[in-house]
Image 1 (cartoon, rainbow, N blue to C red):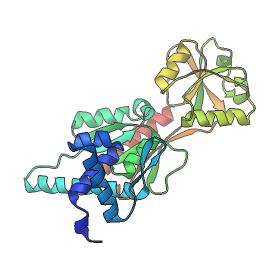
Image 2 (cartoon, one colour):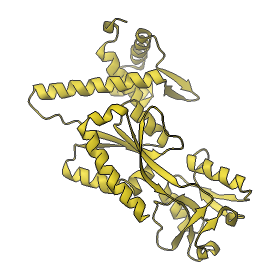
Image 3 (cartoon, helix red, strand yellow):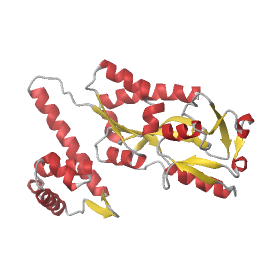
Image 4 (cartoon, rainbow, N blue to C red):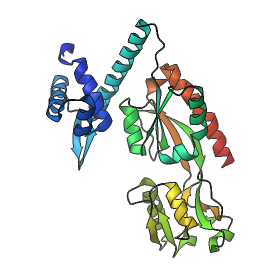
Length: 297
């Protein structure tokens, strides 16, 4: 393959497309038309001889080769930015990018983020996303580190365990199950539970466990995110099973649920990421506070 057939401009455009996976938004950021962006990406795929994305239902999804190209394009941009900064005699100001979900930001990473931003506000950029988007961000080079709960550890990324928590039942202090030291799945028979929306990983695992235990239950309300789920329990809508890192607000008690696996948060990164001292520095900052929080939980 002639490297001249893969211009840097096409790689830069593909990196933007890979971040949005939406031609309208990517073209707007690049300030070009959608047809022009389509042409750039089509020609790039032709030059490389591999499809770079495909459609899955209503979503566009990068292929494995597309993830590799996006990762290379971003690394190329970073190296060029570093060179130009050094050439101009200034310190490179690129931030470390961290991708994580709501639960990790609220209950696991807050102390680290506050400390890092207090030192230098340009050192850290945050992406809020679900675990699927987090893995995609790390694979494509959009994020240097990602934190989340993983059902299966990725074999193409390095995964480091941060903290493990039991699953607990939130109930009002006057609830019949509040008197128990621990709760079993059969104890939930007949309960109307506050749960995440369908197809969310926590909801899927919970339904599977209750079905295996032959527990008859129903949905009180579906809610997105631990804060809203907790608020519905406070309002008396129904009990909820949450990750043990979520603190119980006044009026609620948390009871460990036997028969449910513990929940483990991992930080993931590209195997080559540790060659960057900025990444290793942030990773070292994340791990001690997370481990301490797990012990307190």
